Image (cartoon, rainbow, N blue to C red):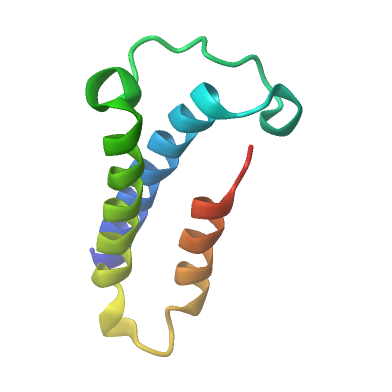
Length: 87
């Protein structure tokens, strides 16, 4: 259940970041046509709030797996990788 919660929150963070990259990214880095999605997190919340939500969902995901201290390094690495992705 906790890992499922972690994955769900990271999935939301991933989608919001995808919307941000679609809006602010470069075609060469993102690897697809940009600014094609109309119904997304940016349309609902704007850029700054969306950036804040990416961080909040990632932080909550990490909080959900704290009970696995010492055995959650791969899940944390995945979350950090998602925050830093450019495509």
